[in-house]
Image 1 (cartoon, rainbow, N blue to C red):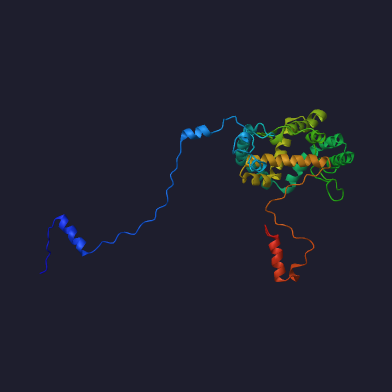
Image 2 (tube, rainbow, N blue to C red; image 1 turned 180 degrees about the horizontal axis):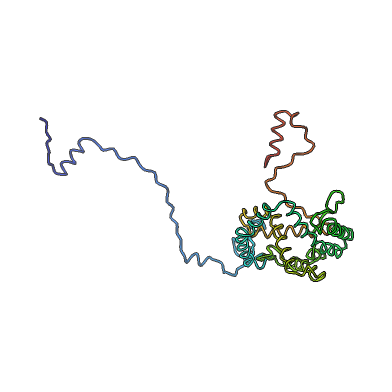
Length: 329
């Protein structure tokens, strides 16, 4: 049976035996990165630093040429609410509360008004409300010096109030007569003669408006009660006019309000949309045209002088496609 034999020997004798067996190969040399000594002194840095009020042009090694100055990046900004919306914090909170009320109460009422009433009845109520606003429309066209539109609006008022059964039927707007409804008001007259819109406001009941539009709207609504009197000074008239006009306006802008709610900044988009629309309306009264900005992701329009695509070769089609692609030539 094989076994193990342990031999004890002193270290010196064991080392001599290893030396006699042969030399032990040395490990390969390792490569090290060169080390460069760096001498640094805080006192030296302080002694060589230029004074704080020194002109860079007079400090050696600090000359500033025009190219170096042109490479500077300057960031400017402003702090606080926008210039046209000084009450932004109040308006934003009013907008938030109004949207909660709209989703819980106004929107369901508007949809019930749209779906619950037959179309002719709903259209008739809207026609009555518009007909009651015709005196204000005609007066403001007259104040703006638009005589032709003034007589057209008075003609609509006379025809719809008689043949249209008090405004229930828009007879004047039928193709045979062709007098379209044109909304106008004192706010438009103020803007027509250069009156600024004033600060933007979002009021709990009125919604998006400005100081100019608020004052103009109050004058529009006060025209019949204070100038004509009965029966337009009754509470029933004011309540009916307010409810029907509010529901019609809510349905008119339903798609736009839904799009605004889906945006990243609903309050800011609602403000900008309203102000831009009012600017276009005032410009239209003055005969000016404000073009709406084109969408950035709109597809480019191909030139009109291109031959039909069916008559082009494959290589020509590829060239045209490359030229219409973003960044193509």
